[in-house]
Length: 346
Image (cartoon, rainbow, N blue to C red; front, side, top):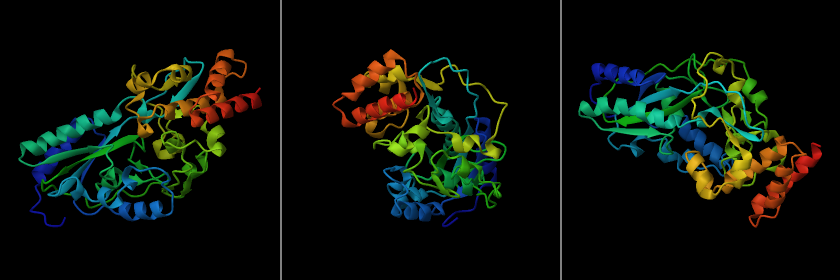
């Protein structure tokens, strides 16, 4: 660590214990140095166009790869991982869009609460502590990798031993002189390439490298029309995609809690397409929705209906016909595609 005073082992132990006691499945400490390989990778992939319309940490790679951007006096960064493994409950909806596990409930809210307990320990010791979770200001995967929480999987996710990639990541940026991890977790992927072969759109173009222009998890969030060539592959996914995790051996699990009662594991597509803007944002607003535009969700719902609805369902047919004449050109085009898709499935 550059410009750092003598590290405090006792405080480090207290911080790590607080993180685990707060429910973090993994917690560790890293230095205040520039985050590599993230900085180099972000620039290279952005220049190659692989980020597509995605912003996030691509918006300003130099900022998001420098802990000083979050706290100029930073000495160390505490990384934390929250386990969100849950089993799907039995589906009860006839026209439903599937939701990726990380979005069933506000897991990031629980993560911020756990990281907040770490922050309390640091502040009580007289230091500053800035909580970062789901924040474009720092590349949390690189922080977690360097802090010894896991290794980079070929699907670009961080894989935590005994948990896999079913974690949300965040950190606490602090001016406390903690003892950093110096031993990265050994790569556990070996020759396995199931995530590359299992991606429905071949979005993982090389180990650890995802082309956002092909990734369903991004395409359903972004503002652009869903490319025609990937719409059938979208299947019943309304938000997110877990496929590269579902096929990953280190991420396999069977014994886990069933989704919490308030979990949004699936959403009624007919509701989405009949709801007002306010109703959609009130219910689903914690999702990332480009420009906070509910039509992004409606657009995806139209595609999913085309892929999954009963072609003889008159209510679905009437709804698609209404949307086919929408003044919004993107909604109209996606609705007409869904109509054609249903005809092909008769």
